[in-house]
Length: 285
Length: 247
Image (cartoon, rainbow over all chains, first blue to last red; front, side, top):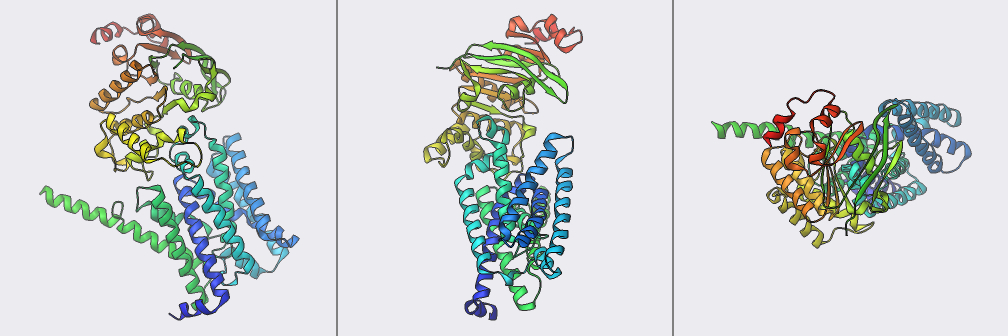
């Protein structure tokens, strides 16, 4: 209760709250497509690969947004270039490119700034959200939600049946890179809240929980956003009251939601299925 | 207003090996065409190359005098069942509704009329009772019928089906072939990748017989002969006359 009281009274907490909720929502939205397109590893890769961009931005003292988007997009193209032009499979291409970018990023960050900054970027510190961070997150949120809403039809069909999408004339490669671009934006927006290392938990876990609960993509996107936002607020709560790093708390919150869905989903749940098959045995007997 | 379909000199290579070699043919509208050949003959590859879904070494496909690239909205393609993610969160009626997307264009959502039309297509394949099921809950034959319904929803003039009869039940097969015949009779052109020799004569009136290169293309009676088949399958087709008697 005290938390809600403070939320009403402290501007810094409000900023953190608004940012967290927005990050949760857009991670759920993009995460749904990442999960369905089998690109979970790609999400992990892009999130790690924005690190050198963040470092370079610090060095040039420009907003970290620009550098991060640049290296994120470079990574997506690098991975595409390797997997399409050689016999290297895409998961290996992802591993090669993102570890290189991440390593470069760590070296640059330690050169550029102190180790505390590195920890913040790696693990998130939602309470240190500045005005500019909040606004960047809100703008990115509007872009991501707007794009997905406008092109939902195209995203649905190219994720479900890429061949049909291509057969009727959609540029599926462009759609792929557009999603990579949105993913980079989402990662950048998430830096303050969850940090580079654990963005993937916000992308993949809420969307996977939602995936177990519905047979409609639109419902999945909404559910994933809700789970993402809920996890982000839980992360904020713990980091405010118990001084814990927000990223790991958020990651564990998403995991808890996933476990509940995994065990008790009406159709897919582990317990539900055990219960159902027991019911069937009874009726058979 | 449908026109003939023509493939000219289509060649496709996979990692240096040519799997489709210089294939050409032309068929009049209102044909039900089987693409026949042994495993690895390049049948599916030919179909994808015709549609521009994979990179060709050479060749082109034309409808009338137009390149196929300009005619995409009047073409429906039904991929092999193995290419679909059957766990995708989508129910049967929404899968069929996807067939209305090509003609909607950007920024438009399917209307109530589009949804009614999708249900009508679902009824044509006899799957209306499964409208709210997730697609992975269906049998192979039912899945194939749903994808045919999606193709019907596209209101296309040219239908490309990749191995629609593989691993499906007899009644689904009958439903599907019946619909393909109806399409043909209403002047549509239907191409089907197929490999079950026993039903060739009863299903198709035109054939493309290939084994990497084209063996023969034309009416079934002309193409489906022992000499051609022996060449295509690279072994004596002694059973061949029996097969003909069966059908």
